[in-house]
Amino acid sequence: MKKIIKIIILIILISILIYVVYQKYIEEKEVISIFDKSFLIVMSGSMEPAISPKELIIIDKQNKYEKGDIVTYSDYENYIVTHRIVEINNTEFISKGDSNNINDKVQSLDKIHGKVIFHSKVCGIFILYMLKPITIIYLLYIIVLEIYCRSKESKNEEIAK
Image 1 (tube, rainbow, N blue to C red):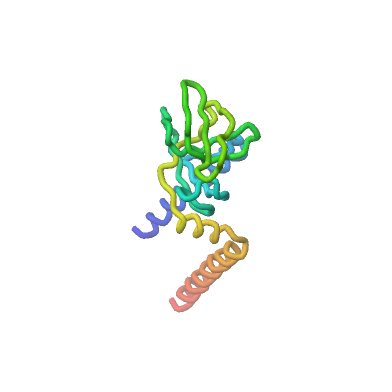
Image 2 (image 1 turned 120 degrees about the horizontal axis):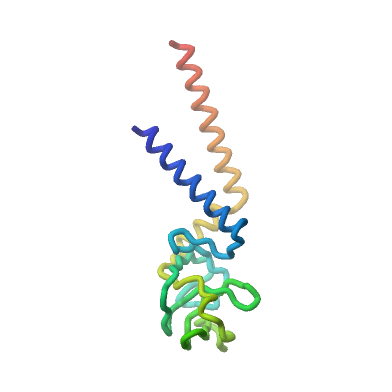
């Protein structure tokens, strides 16, 4: 039973990986979404104190956005920006970072990737740490070592029989 659960989890993880690679490199999307949710790390302090740098944010695609919503959008230079909507009409909106002095340029509503529905400093720092090359190398080393030890163990059991 445990083996079946491990196989199912592995299949799910591989499917998600294939889907992410497809969206990133085939569809060339800037923001990858899974079930209309996207996970991003904020890198600037423009939204402090509401959202700090290195925080993980989860955004959700909405049908309607309102004044005061914190949204992530692509600006005219294709930078991914997370700011608060300060003005909105039928087809356009103006946003501003909470710690910025001036409003952003007018943007089209179709440039919005989603509304921020969750943010966490702890999760963001953890993910940034996990993405460091030395951490990835260490994790790969542990995985290879585990596979090697298990195969050695299996061979020893076969010899003992």
